[in-house]
Length: 403
Image (cartoon, rainbow, N blue to C red):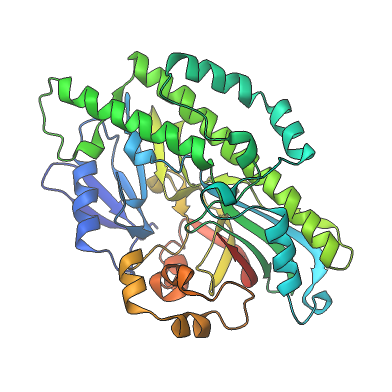
């Protein structure tokens, strides 16, 4: 039996929310009601337990739309997602001090935003991977139709982390096995694609004659059959494919760093390379619809996914149960319980040092907004979606690299 709360909105839409024992701030509820009331939302809006207020649409929401897509709901971190691999290494084989491992990862993988977050010279393996992907030719077609979408050094950014909540981690599972896990997306070019089409959708909304009210300009949309709709689907597909390739290229570099600093090992299990900010056409409740997962992971029957906690908490490898009411989805993480600004104002470096005890990671003012206390309790988030997923592995971080 599904364990969700049904919310009937004043605008006529229905929300099904997996939020038992987890907080949902009023601003997020208002945002959810605005989306659920749109006439092209199919059946209902599904809300995951990591839900929180976001730009464009609520993070932790699954938005099925029929004949339309909302670019701002997909956002600008298009294709952001996770990748994880299990190694043959055990906790006992790790050195007591993991700083050398972290330093070598940061040498192999550029981290942060701006020029320092790019390869000064892309490794040959990265250039080869990009050449074989066909992404360069596909981007040329997109830019040929939309000249304002300029590439943001996507060769130099392939296999790089970025900033914000993106990370690379070494973790231990319940058997003491070492996992390598990372979180990133489509980097600067994906951001430019998202920003451009969000603006195009807003301009199109101003010209539309509608029989209903759109309560937020961030809910501007493209209608299937319009040239901009097709162009957006093409461009967002490019960004999602780039994001997946970026994680693969980054994982290759992290593995190289680990092989240079740790005892010899093999890869025993790959979880999944999964998006959690994306749009895809799927079939639900009798119709083909566009499913936007804004901070949510596909969790079809038997599908593996990754739900990371904050940098001092636990993370989970999960298997989907294919719950139809959630559009076969689950949460993408713990979810913020306060904004970055609020976290910086509330917590000190000393608080962060205490919260990340035992983890080799940055312990400075620049990452206080990512401290574990700024996020929801990951155990409660997992418990609230027990009918959506089963936990396969529980991971605890021992190294965390942040931009």
